[in-house]
Image (cartoon, rainbow, N blue to C red):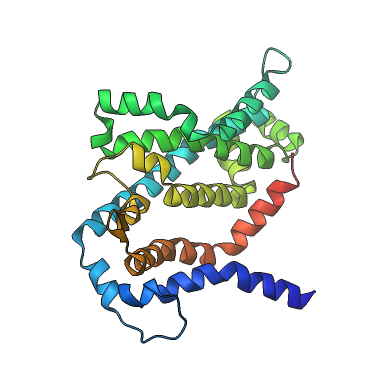
Amino acid sequence: MTVTIYTLAILYFSPILYMLLSGFKTEYQAVSPSFVFTPTLETYKSVLSDASLYTYLGNSIFQVLASSVLCLLLGLPAAFALAFGNFRKKGTRDKIYMWFLTTILLPPVAVLIPLYTWFHAWQLNTTPLGLLMAYVGFHVPIVVWMLYSFFADIPTEIMEASEIDGCTRFQQMMHIAVPLVRTGIISACLLVAVFIWNEFFLGFNLTGNDTATLPVYMSRFREQQGMFIAQLSASSTIAILPAIVLGWITQKSLVKGLTLGAVKG
């Protein structure tokens, strides 16, 4: 069993290993796949000397930070309201929750044409705020879906006792619910950040040269003359490093949050 697990792990990691090694090759060496070669930093120097890389990188960092914060600010109160709010009609809570779930399943390509039309009509593709609104709209349901399962697991007796003591809904959320589901909040925020960092489809279709993100930058290495494999590998390695480092630092909280969320609600 152990041998099988290690074999599968090696097979799963092999494309990433090949990408890491290809970043230290020249374009000529990268064309002919081989694990035996003379490493060089020529490709990394070429990629890092491109000033446009830092523009795309800055756009990605802005989108990840701003979108994660906004998704949390909007999704956390919504999930809390779904879990502890009082609805006049029976079944309203379930209908709203199902609406959020079905929104998660909506593929971006299904709404690309109207989004593309609006972005160009209002020139939203020339400002990072346009893509930010799209990212927030697509990822708030993910935050609501994850946090609702955590909030729903809080005993109602705690909320009733705090209400008797005079706590408002906002105080209940900030001083009671949020500390109890801190792990879930971290997991939801990290998950949204990773999704947005890796997102390509919306970034490619709804942005211009000054507002595109890092995945769009990497697509430039495939041109009519061919694919620049070494440069693509180097830029891909640079792109995945922040996600790997962040995931390594927060892996305990992320795994714990996703595991707990999987058995709740």
